[in-house]
Length: 185
Image 1 (cartoon, one colour):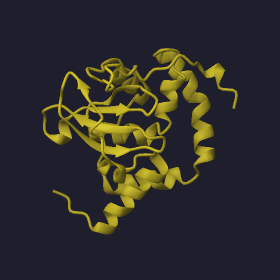
Image 2 (cartoon, one colour):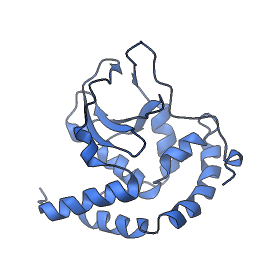
Image 3 (tube, helix red, strand yellow):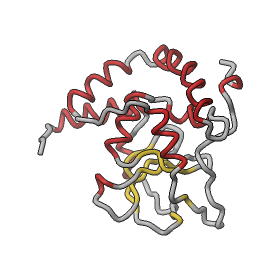
Image 4 (tube, one colour):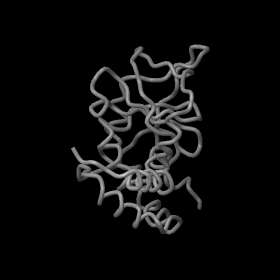
């Protein structure tokens, strides 16, 4: 087992939060309002800037549980098979949520087109990202994902649970109907 100093853990947490919008501190928030269908146990891992939350759900050991993302906009879906896979995806496609937004209702080829626009724009807007990625990789051993867009696409399509609001309304899938040509930025 690898042991990290408190400073190293704080640095990793800072980099994940600031550069990859994976805020570990928000895992302590109250998520008692979340109800999964089917009714499975979950653990909040992290939040993100717009109020969404990453959950590890199911009955497996924590590190083997799939990861569900619940947005603040009424969408939810599986985004990774486990925490290591999620962190690996975040390292390569930190704009993953925008890929889902501009997916043309879950079309893989549309997600790839959108990625072409987002790739340069994202790194231009977040110049600290490259350094954060290097620091995180120096402390964590993450799997190499050959085709991260295809993996994200497959995970969302394989969502096996969703969130149910207090009034019984089921959260929608994470894919949205926008396409890359809709992004006029």
